[in-house]
Length: 563
Image 1 (cartoon, helix red, strand yellow):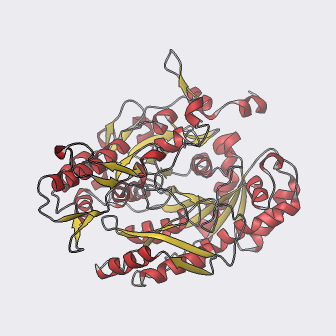
Image 2: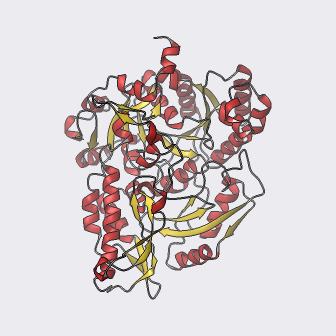
Image 3: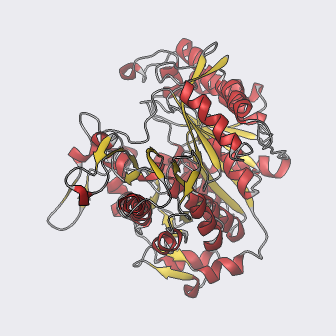
């Protein structure tokens, strides 16, 4: 097969032509027996509780985080790089494993059509992963909506807890982009149909249940966290929790299997633990704590991922996930493309293929800021360029020199076209860092810092803002959250991924702007405070031409159009 043929194939064609090994054989590579697995067909399995209990005694491997510059229409290839890097470690004879998030159905049918990597650097079975997989998201949706049903039923059945219908915080959820569900009215009809009130839907991955699942250590911890969920406030302004509604046991029963990490494989048979949602208000693309910790016990190197730009994914990975789980990353890989940097420099999408060093020099400030940000956490940085055929030698040389001047290792990545082979240069650069550079990881703010100061620290240090403004309701809620004893929680910023600022149109490295916080709420079960900025949505809408238009299934049952 020549290069042209390889390039012409779609991701799903490549995935469907791959020969998968039984998951028991993949597990054997990391010394797991069939008894350690709970099978979901031939190529998917969950780790048993017994397996996880046994592995806890093992020594931890090295933790490598993959993140990226702010996403652009030109594409960056963060998951592709993560998968390719895991495969490349295998080529070098290293015992490596991937720890990735599960994709949400909403974006699969909405904007991008899938999230399993791309080209010859994918996790498989690709269609399963992008659709129902092992049903984890359905379980989360059900647990979320059970709590919503119990809440409204409590009000209907006499409202002993004195819940104020005007102060209900819990929202229903659905794992699909559906804009009309953002703001709805429920309880219409006769008296038996419930109390009429305004309600809202979020996409499943934005449910606090997802964040709780991602952060829970075990079933006991899961139940503790579920119990702390603030569903509403009563007429006296006091919080009402899921425990008050006696919802914890039944929700935990729905989540029993979803709590167990899933194991699948890459195209080159590298083991991958895929578990937890793409953002979950937790870490925009982070894998679950449980899966990451297990992966560290199973291999010498665990490659994990934080989604969107490093200003979102990596910051939350460091400040929330690592802080909560006691994780200490050893290195971070920052993914960029020359195309995306030129786009940040003001070049239109249809002319990105042309050499343009001036635009590259203008746009590279976005990469520069991400490098600076990551270095603030004390973790050594490796920058990788996800290679495109249109990249020129002069452009690549400029980026290499730019990175090396800032104390970063640099490597080209060609994993999309060549799989693990195309990631060897990157893997060697990462290995060199792991062996020769010490990580001095620390979150960017202490837990006891006041919430407003935490928000200001992230806004100024990570985003480059000059100031932070608050809507009156957000200001009031911050005071209430602090009063309720949650002032030591980390802050989870909800912000557009397309810019370092809260305005998606401000590319490059915006400066002198004010970050606008319009809403604040406590995710008491997850253990963080969410600050919503700009026009960010927790229930996305579908675009004019959704990816769903191109997805089909043949008479023989072969799915097409899924990325």
